[in-house]
Image (cartoon, rainbow, N blue to C red; front, side):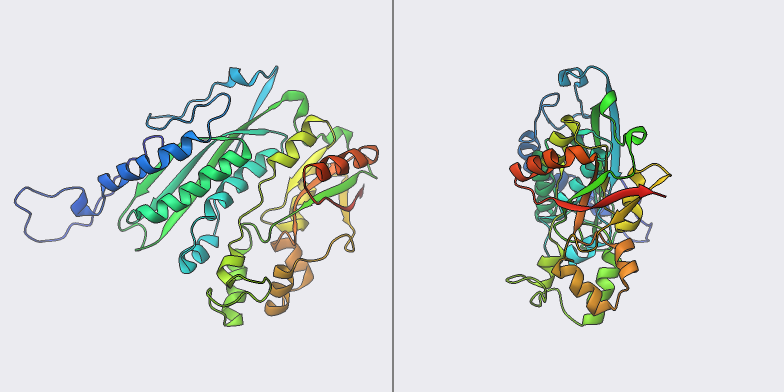
Length: 356
């Protein structure tokens, strides 16, 4: 969306009679007019994400951000990039595209939060074989809404129409974000971590955007269609339930970071609980989770039962209902719980840190 002009591709050569006026880009499958129409649709959405440092205007060759406007004393930039994996396959099969943009934003901004950074701006990459204006608008509208909720500006990106690269009706997404944090607030604070520190978590909204290749395998085993009634949530189809967007954590995490209430944060993504919590700890410390601290949400219970998935496989594939985990000094736990409750969150005392 910095330019949002379709990316050129080289059509396969084929014998035949040329049109009287010669070939056009549209003859090759790339519709520049459709790309321009998309830019006009999404420009107001991007503008609505404007924040201090960025006016979120589209149309230039690059997106601008005024770092000085943050008023930070000694800022460190933190970048992150991600996609939404094969969750896209469910969105395509179910014809539901308005939440996948939030998944894209959340997977990026939640990662930079784990370093203590405030997300500043976001760029997206939308690639397809043939641009469908309605689908692209739905996806990018979701991106813009999520950026606004996360407090970061949607300042650019790219729409790539590449016939021959993607089959009809398919598209792919990638996202990129940059955040900033004062040098003395960078997480994790490894040198301060001790045995006895407490692990406090915020719940996930579901599988978020990880483990969907296994989820799709389980659905195939179940024999259910995406339009079937969800066996684990009322009033939704299976497709709708499994497309529940990834939770955005900036509104909860940033106040805790600024108040020096957390020593580290772990965003629970690929690798699940098993692999992600240790990423915020020094090598001599390990997490010890209390399995009685939370109940496995219904979507994960259904996946485990239907797929006959072992508990260890669940824990290293899915977030199992836990989206963000903080390492906290024992004396700061009451303040963090009070803060998150005041912000409308539902924190869970998940366990503690122990010597390896």
